[in-house]
Image (cartoon, rainbow, N blue to C red; front, side):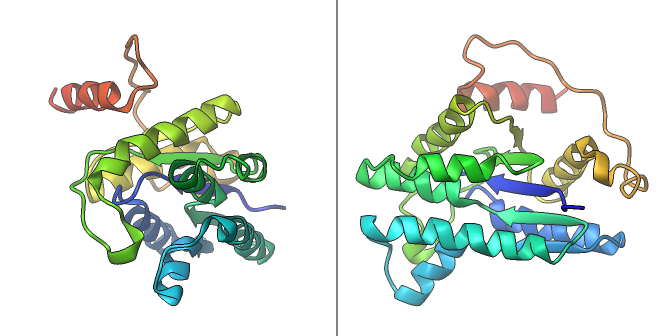
Length: 216
């Protein structure tokens, strides 16, 4: 049986790596065999000492997909991907105006049982070559949302810091039938919060609504 895959997507400095590591550690502590695949683009930049050129983006995206497939072949209970090739496609679009990576990236993205998109509620932190600045967070977030929505791929936005964000991610895992029984020790998730907004695909509006609900 193929392990369910969970993807963590989001702009730079939005908490993907911290949440993926915390989620893997928490679930492993409950006895699940978890494969965590780190972001290949980050390691590529560290190894090369620079950011990739346009002609190198496709190779990075495909290598990342291969690493994820290899981890899945080890038959864990759950595979967590700290970003997917979709983020490479988004940055290729943003930086080079190159949209050619989207078909491959979105086809790969369709294999995930759950996609968690990081909310833009954490303070931006510099990270050397990997990060351009807080001004790119909103454009990247918008491109990720547009790509997922355009392909008809569902996602959930996760807000909060530290334990609060981890708890929301764990609750989202209750949607995965393959893990339902194994996650029984977790607190049952609350009923879904409903809100209406004329611009429900806009991150800024969504964040304001989240803040109001959290304050209740």
